[in-house]
Image 1 (cartoon, rainbow, N blue to C red):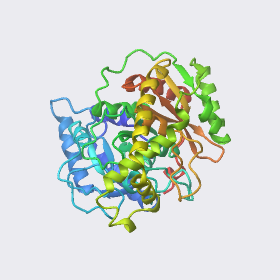
Image 2 (tube, helix red, strand yellow; image 1 turned 45 degrees about the vertical axis):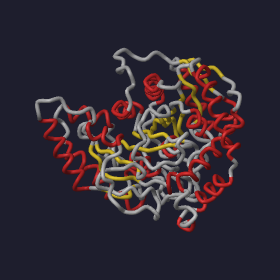
Image 3 (tube, rainbow, N blue to C red; image 1 turned 180 degrees about the horizontal axis):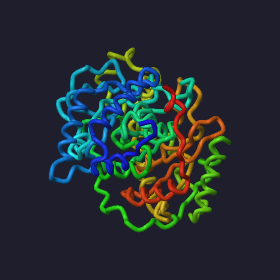
Length: 440
């Protein structure tokens, strides 16, 4: 796999008998062996089980029945999601290394669709912001953060170690690492994916989602996990109507990201997209504080049985969040939930004015440090509102790191959002690869 093969291309080749699932799995395992000691994207790689699954998928492809929609596709699973036979460590030494007794429902769906589970990808500790051991492959010196908390999933996809991966997002944990690593990610509407078997952070904010190389690949993955209610259209998608909230997003992005974003917007306009600047919703200024309050209280509730006794086993940033949650007054938590409900009520008509809202995915490219996973300010609003959001790479900034374009759509509007994203991808034609890709 000297050049990247997309999930869609691999599926087509497998179904036409041009690509063997075993050979594809071996290619992914080879890339893991090639890069893992440098980027540390995986907690565990279940090689023998993956090859056994691949052999089963090869038999399925050769049979008379139609193969599953993901038949033969190797995937990674973020290590806060249960995979039968593998421990769910959640990035913490406090978690027992006891194998999960069953797959989380979302993993079971992927298996039934014919996907091959390669193993578990690195997460930050309990999917919060204490930095992981994972490194960003876009920096040859490996000194830039990959983002988090779905760090391993983004890096594994960026380097072709798998063709797609599962991640989660409570603030910005899918969109941010995908943008930093030059790949695509989709966070669907709140509640659309069953979170049973997923270690919780905050039950009013947690989402599961997917990471892949492109919006088309994301669609193939998400259709297995979510009933989108419509099949892809055969006819070309018309140029979209896009809302651009310049206040907060473009105004707060640094010059490098702003320059790449404006160039991408200009390219989309040249290709026929219509754009209109839009004002932010009322309540946007209080959103960050309310989001943190809800997350702190609900994370403290999750960890109330272990945190007091095992405080030293928690990372400093997570410990500070739990302290904050334990000290928050019930009336303040209730006020934050009320603000969230009102914001969710107002956002639907705001989003329905356009095919998608469009903005930078992050304030900066991946910070040149391993001491942070980056700020979540640009992604947090859409986790708070529970509406679908995604990112696609749109260019390289002056520092050589990728920048992402974030698209946001109305509640349960994943199908339309994916159509817009694929139109944008074709117009932007991002083909860059991490420098580490060809570094043997």
